[in-house]
Length: 543
Image 1 (cartoon, rainbow, N blue to C red):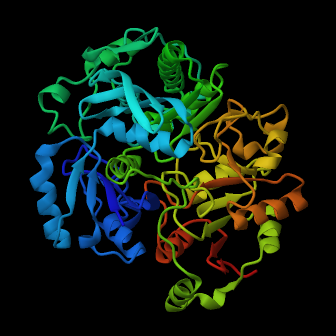
Image 2 (image 1 turned 120 degrees about the horizontal axis):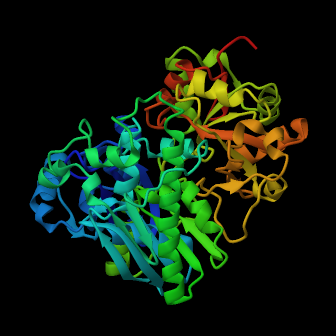
Image 3 (image 1 turned 180 degrees about the vertical axis):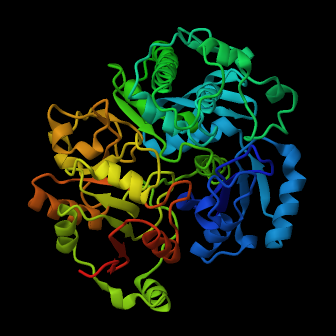
């Protein structure tokens, strides 16, 4: 029996999204981000101690039974530091294997995709000095055919625009993506990012000189951009966070330039290989607007985006690469419900300890659908935690998208976030084509690719269709999440539209909930009306 734990993370503040993945005899049995346990968003500068412990706990395994630690970065100079870490925290260190950062990204997408042959695009800020790669996945082997070195980075480009618009670098890039839909691409970004056939070139003058001179010391409390970027954008200083109107066209222009760069690379790869399957991973891969534009390319027949495309997913990639190397086999789950879970007995005990068990009723999907149809808001805490940033029904908040005010209600009273931020719909795959323009071969299961709503749908379900008539839809396949499937079906009987808003069960700037205690705390700290927790429904007000 071969047991491998893949880990992402590190020891410096520039490292983020640590996670751990456990593979036993080639089978991915557990994967989860550190932030879900320690409650520190992104958990920067950490090795995933709690996630590693949960890997061991999940399979009732001791650290001495682990054959390999697969470290998701090719940094053998850290061997002694990692060994000391494991000796200190676990009393034992298994054999350490180092795996290239972008190879981990590529593996995390290729092997779960199920494609026999595919183009693989990975893009992020940087890792092991590389920012973007194009590879070919074939016969379980990955061959890199092009790479771009830091600081020539699409991730750096998008992050600098994020920061100069008043948002937080390495955290708020998704806000820039959402904001872009409100504007027009009026700004010429050619002096910032040059794009040609199969290449791009970032103007290094827009990056703070300190990023090169003191790269180990520059923190997120300082500007990563230079005055040259302000000059090109014709703004005097960094925009204020709430300066909504003055940001939208810059955001739209940056998004278009990112789309153009990615499409140029993929067109080049297709012309070179004639392969029509595509996998995407890396932090830039979480840009679902970019992924939509890519999915619309006529030659792309099948598209898979790794749900945990950030560095968290590299724990999976490192473990998969190591398993193939030493065990010659892998078996990847087709779902992302790979984290920990709590049984109903444990949940009942927590409810009783908090003196609120008497405020619960037995779970009933018809009751849930009825209240959702009345525009009540439900949180869901069930089953195994999702791996990746998207809540896909096990740590989710559900709401009625037909209520035109629901988007504002969720943003103001529950998520406590900017009013422009959109919400995503969840719908059964069999019902999806009534509402959305779904392209065959594109994987919409994990909220990684947006699509257009069909004519009139934005009036029918206004709170989950964005201002540009797109939606980051989650298609749920029959039998994959029985509770959510039943709720959708019952809601459809009442509303005639089996579509719900699905957003993550967390408050602004907090990780998604992990424990029953997290769920209860978040429930009472927000405007959520009901909490489905295990086989019970917790009611906040008299009903």
